[in-house]
Length: 394
Image (cartoon, rainbow, N blue to C red; front, side, top):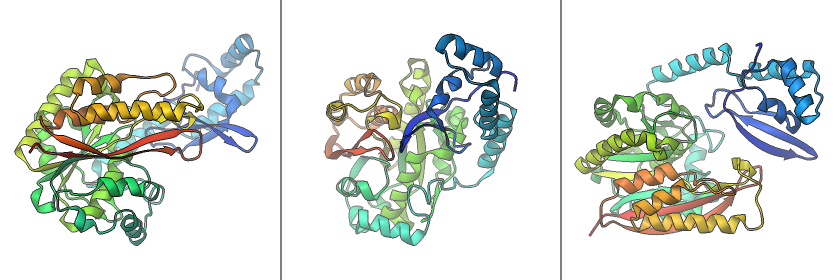
């Protein structure tokens, strides 16, 4: 490639002993993560499709006084291309193959089994039973909606246990609507799929009838269906619902809520989609499950390093957002979700929280089942996690 261009990737610093690394992660899930020496960062910044390796070397010499041999830069470019991290023909071919393969599948296969939770059905069932014992006793209530995190089950067991109680029974539901947080790139505010999610516990009941209704009214909601391929929040929710409802689980309609939900330029599409969801919720017996988390801070999540006060500031910001959501203060919630503090960034599940708030009926009541901050795995950072339970107006 004459003028190599790096794809849009997540960058995560990592200290391994005395070695300072930079981990590149593909948000599309097409390429495996790649760890590079932290010193490669200035080169990556200049892989913009406008410079050759020789020009990159000259630019580094002039602007930083850094002399990196052109052969080393070319070798790095070759490695990045082989890994599928450059915006080139090889990446586009790989993307096209993956996209076609996904669309042709009858179900959305598990992506996290063996990584985030056990791939063996018996081991997974045992882990879920330890976190959420006696699932049948948890589905004898009348909850309207819940908010749950999508972390590994064992470290969040206490929060899940206090949140997932008094759910409606399967016979009292026509549909479970799962609103999931989307961390990947996307142009559209929402995307659905008519594919049921598969997990080691089985395949979720098909949402095809409900997805067809939405897509018939708004064809664009299926346009970026590939985003479901790596939807962590939706897969974790499906596993939990499998455990809670077993073979009697109602159809699960999975909706990814992207960051453009909060973009004023997407307002027309947001409004028309929410109008369709409100109609669906009004015509059927629906449990709404919001798979969302609060602040994600620290280098593990691409924000500044954690300071002594970061955790306290995170909790204060998170609790303000939760208070607005629980009391139905939709405009205050939206303002808080739009806040992007230099240290804390924006709340991870902002788009999902705003969507949920729109669907809740006037007069609902809510309770905070719990709030915790959990350290990020493998690096410096904290995640704010909450469990919420919503009841219909009395």
